[in-house]
Length: 219
Image 1 (cartoon, rainbow, N blue to C red):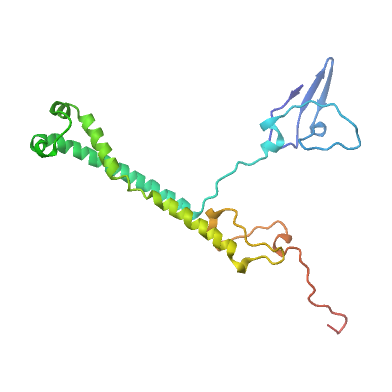
Image 2: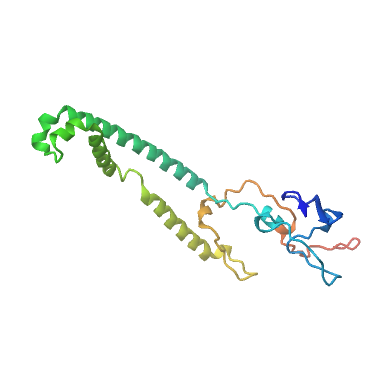
């Protein structure tokens, strides 16, 4: 059995079945996709050619993407900017501190009380730089507002609860309140610019109400 590599579209398919001296050409009409139902026949003989991720249903399955609001995108950009600024300040402060310590070691050793020996401080600039780098890292550890993300998530959670409790958007016909599927998009509500609909029933709900009837001159 020879067949072409799996493609996402199944409009065309060329395969060959070699049975001894006989070669049978197969096309898309002899191909049964996953989930097909048999009718008007009791059984068939078949050969499985595509399985797992090569089946059509898996090929046509789009990759899920994370939905992020504009606030989340801007917040991530600000945090990355702060992280870059923090790394620059830590590196600059550690470099300047290392240079200053080596330059003023004799004058400051009396009251700073170095725990590292004099020979180590004078001969190992890299060790001194790493010590200062760790010290300034601990000083600037609160430079990035980690609690900001937690606060935003808590606010969005309570916003979702208030949306569920809102009586003005309660569906009386279905006796169902508003249901928040994702609290990450709360701030996007009311900012819709375009609506694409494939059929009118999506917007009109297929509800037909009698408005007016005209028979001759009478309404």
